[in-house]
Length: 417
Image 1: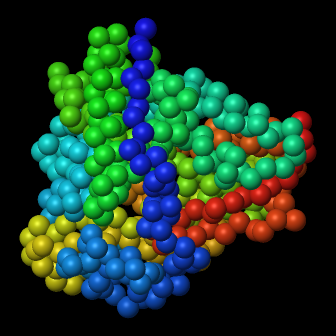
Image 2: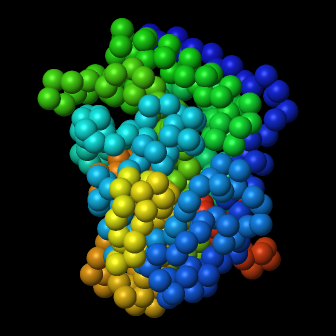
């Protein structure tokens, strides 16, 4: 049996990385009027997406030449031309410092080799099995804490916890180490802005996963790390440094995005009670509700690429060395692709798919797991919280942020069981 390594906390245990992270995502109540205004002017606009919504200087990227790319066609062009618009240079100064040699920071041919192996580990049929064995027990355990009360804050008591606890279960982490794990996972992101807690957290998570991986290779089990350690494609397995870097990123890429996606899904349905009623009456509408929530308020509003050669986007010249703010939120609310794009409508007839999980070779590896988790969470809530509605005595939910949007609270009432 594996003896779980002990995670070391930050030296300064009073340091709160969550406060710093919250500052970086902003408190903008609605970035879309500005996004629409920019997109109406041009699909390519000089400047930084971040600086449209904050006066706080960007110490990390502010000195670099940047353009914003807006609208579905322009964004898709960037995402699907990786030989021109590269990941490595775009993310090496930030995510590379935090996570190491992760697939997000790779380009072909290295990225192609390793992604092929990861894709085998996250095939839909593999992920579907985790729904019942891993996701459902976590969801049920969390709901037991409030199901008897007839009221809850679904953000603070549920969505902010369950995707991360799914990850803890997948790697067989001792629940007592969960808070330290979460803290280190967030703190490592601070490497990109020069705070010493960033590399400290990355080092401690790296040491933890290196030892855990050694143990799992010697005594594999049904857990995710054993699975990743042994999966292969074309006779090749994942090298330790690539796997450890992926595991460092898992908390952020897997947990955080699902937390935001589920929070937005529940908020959207509860603030559109007619559509919530339709989903309650017909659960086959859940996939459409999830896709519409991802389109309407995707987990990430903008991502970066690096222009490696002189080129053009929609007829606009782009110089080599330019950093591209690829505004996914603009693509997903492009009125030419999604009529009345600011309206949440699970019955909308889409002619194109949303880009919430990006597109091209860097399409999110964990997208199938995110959808499984969102589906399982919503089904459990509808099963066990009858007459679900917003709490009229509490403030209505407000989705905030310019980069990673989510409501801070979602107060609800329901018939207690």
